[in-house]
Image (cartoon, rainbow, N blue to C red; front, side):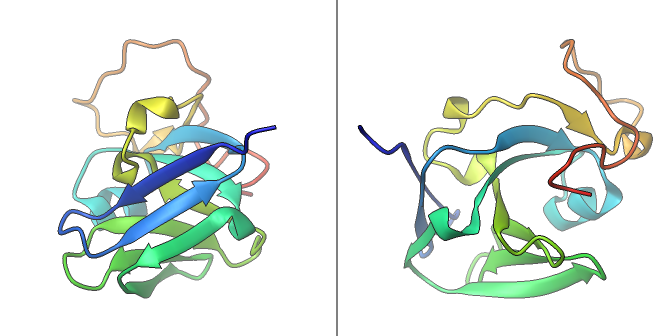
Length: 138
């Protein structure tokens, strides 16, 4: 049986990584921390087992963005690559847009919609939660 692989990297090309295995899920996060960390109104994340993350090249810088978690960025260009909940070290969230093929992992839900920027509209019928509203994130 073939193990799925999802390669990715940063804007400048210094960081290259590969995710192996099947993702737990993928979703849009509308929280203010993700908005500020990315400079974007929403971030799409895919959750994998932490053991599925393989850094192939480059250096990541870790920033503790809240009491609950840390974000990993390319040390050179600042591209956000990963988020890790301190209470769930067995998982890692990867920014879907940093994957070589982001279309491979379409989001399945919206979380932290209480922070959604009002001018951003989605024409989907995905489930939405005003808070973290999912098992991995809680």
